[in-house]
Amino acid sequence: MPQCYTMCATTFGKSGEFDEKAFRFYLHRQIRAGLGLYLGSGGNGETHAMSPAELSRLYSVGVEECKGKVPIHANLPEEHTAEATITQARIAIQAGVEAVHLYTLEGRHGFIPTDRELAAYFDDVLSAIRHPVVIAVNPTMGYIPEPPIIAEICNRHADIVGIRLSGVREIYMITLQDMVRRPMTYHWQFGSAALDPLALGAELFAAEANIIPATVALFRDLYEQRQFDELGTVLAHIRRFNKFVMHWGPCARWIKMAMHILKLPGWEGGLRRPYLMPPEPELQHFANGLLALGIPEITKLAEPLGLPIPPQH
Image (cartoon, rainbow, N blue to C red; front, top):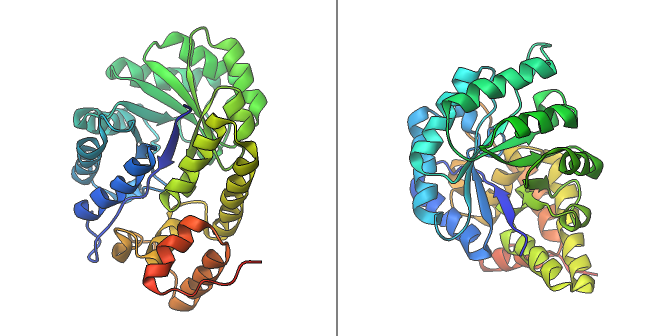
């Protein structure tokens, strides 16, 4: 069965602290859906605003709850130096995660690394850590490296076991599959495509699964069972959900808004400062649109709360 992963949010308490109890409940929803987990993302996970001690506890809780049940990875916040990335990686590795995801070197203040600089960066990082690594290619770094340099880096380092792709077309992955000289797991962002990457052997990751994990898992199961009529209905639900929430995206803001509306574990803490939850009228507007989507999993969460469910046509 193809694996699907959730790029996880981090739960905070009313005073802004990492809410460990809520996070365990949050993880249980993901485990029940059978979804793998990426912990600690700088965007959805808000971990740029977390201390090393908090990150250590975040990863440790994830491993305690999930190891042996679903895959548990650390998606490290992007950094500007090899030393900072190594420090981040060691925190996650010490906690026992199965793999660490490393973004390409961040482009900052106009700096875009050359191929030589990017290769040297990974040489420096991977010489200091010995652990399964997934390279994350994402346009939020300020650029997209060409496939040959990513393939070269993978061919030089046996610890690289996967490549995670966002914001590229399927031909990018196909080119890597042609150029990398050993089997590699490819992780593909659900929001940009789904069926073609699955047909090419990729695993999917989805921010949407923070709120609708059972729906994402159902998509995976129906694909595996080749039940394409039902699959189309579920895919349409996920695509409508994505289109709606991306008005407040792409990072954690929409996730925390949905958690607030549906009273999911950790909803009270909202976003970590300096970011703030929207005012009540905007939250109500969001709630109205979210409930109007008619997604069964959201309706099931909303009904016990007495939230008004618009009639479906």
